[in-house]
Image (cartoon, rainbow, N blue to C red; front, side, top):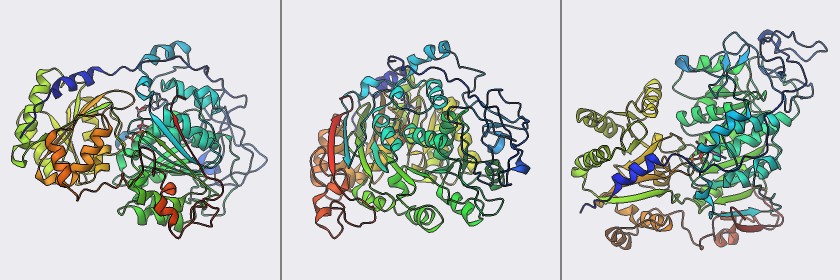
Length: 608
Ligand SMILES: Nc1ncnc2c1ncn2[C@@H]1O[C@H](COP(=O)(O)OP(=O)(O)OP(=O)(O)O)[C@@H](O)[C@H]1O
C-alpha cells in the first residue's frame, strides 16, 4: 500500500516559508566599549605568575578593547575587570583545520569577526535584519513545566536579563529579537546559578539557552588563580560536550558569535582532525572548551587540558551523551578526572528528548536541579508536517525517485530547498547516494566511514545547495542547524522513536515549517505505536493502516510515555514508582543528585 499525498506542495511551501514574523525590538543598544585600554599578553609571557608589571601592549586591535591576560596555560589572580568591555587575545590565528578560520586573525592579534561583516554596530544594520527573526507565533501556546525548588521567574525579553552589553550586542547581531520559550525560562535559571535539566523541542534555541549564561558568567566571574599544573596544561572555565564532531563545530561557531568582543575565548576539539592544531589553539587560551568526548579524553590523558577550573558543564543532546554508547566516557570526564563535583560546578543538561531512565542517570551529575520542559518531553514540533507512507523495501528507491521528481516539478528543489535522507547503514548511504547521482539527482553523503574532511566537505556542499540531497546515517540526526532543509525523508526508519524525533527536527526549525516523510513497512512494526502516538500528539494525520499496526504491536520502545497525563511523570522525580523506591529525592534525602528540600512543580503557558 502506498499513500500518495500532497507532500511536494508542502515541501514547496516550507521552502518558501523562510521568513518569520519579526517583533518589536528589545531596548538593548549597541554596546559601548569599555573604559580600559587593551592589554596584550604575548604567548611567551602567559605562563608567568601575575606581576605588578602589566604585559606589554602590542595589540593592533580596537583602541577601546580590553584584554584579559593569562589565557594560555595559566590562570591569573588579578581581579577580572572586563565585564562589558571588549577584549583582544594575542597571537590569534585561524585555528580551523584545512584553512577554516578559528576566530583569531593570524599574527594580527585581532579577533576575527564571526559575523563575517566589517562592522554592523549600527542600529540601521540591525533593523533591516529583524524581519528574518524567528516566528514567535509558532510557539505561543506551547506548554511549559518547571519543577524543583525556588524556581527563578521567566523573562519576556533579553533586556530583562543582565547579560552584559557586549553579549547583548552580539544577540542583536544574531538578529535575535526576543528569547524563545526555552531561553525565557532556562537563562534566568542558569544565571541564578542553578543546575538544570532542560527539555525543549528541536530547533527551539537550546544552544543559546546554555551559551548565554556561560558567557555572561565568565565575563562577570573572578579571574581564577594560577594552577600549579604543567605549563602546557590549559584550564578552561566551561566545558560543552556534544556527541558528534559536526555538532561540536556548530556549537563552537555559535558560541564564537555570542562571545565576540566579550573577551571570552571559545575553542573546539573533536576527533578525526589533526590534534596538533587543536593543541596550538588551546595554548593560545581557552575559556570555553567545546568538545566531543573521545578527543577530550585524549587531551586529558595527555595532561594538555585540566578540568579543575571548570565552573560550567553543559551537555548538549544530554540523553545521547548518557546512553550506553557514551556513558563510560562521560563518567570518566565528569567523575574520574579533576572536575569539581556537582554543587561546586554548575551543570546544564539539554535535549529534545529525555527518557526517564536517562533522567535518572543524569541526576548523578546534578545538584538540587530544576527540571524544565518546553512542550512535551520528546515530542516533535507541529511545525513539521509528518507523512508516513507504506513502502516495501524493494520499492523504496523508486518511491524516493517519485518524491524527488515531483518535488523538482513543484519547484521546491532549487537552491533553497534541501532534502535530507536518513538511512540505516553506512553502506546503504553510499549506495543510495551513488544511485541518486546516476539518476540525475546531485547528492552527497555523511556517515562514520567517511574521513572527517569528507564529512565536512559533504556538509558544506549540502548547505550551499551544490548537492541539495544529503544521504545520512544517524550521525546527522542530532543538533545540526542547516537552513533551508525543507524535507526530511526517513528512507529507513530508526528503531527508537527519540531518534525519529531528532531526525525530523532537522527541518521545521526556529519557527519555520518543514516536511518529514517516512517509509514504513513490516520491518518497522515495533515502532508503529510510538510513531502513531507521536504523530497524534503533534496533531498529524495518522493513516488508518498505521493505527492498525499500532494496535497489534507491543514490542515498541516507547520509553517516553511511562505514565502520567500530558504533564505527569515528565520530571522523573515526580514518578510515583521512583518515589516509592529506595532513593529519596523529595524529602531532603542524601542522594546522589543532592535533591532535597521543598519540591514544587509549575505548569504554565510559555507566554503567561
Ligand atoms: N531568540 C532567538 N531568536 C531568533 N532565532 C533564534 C533565537 N534563538 C535561537 N535562534 C535560532 O534558532 C535556530 C535553532 O536553534 P538551535 O540550533 O539552538 O536549536 P536547538 O533547540 O538546539 O535544536 P536541536 O534540538 O535540533 O539541537 C538557530 O538557527 C538559531 O540561530
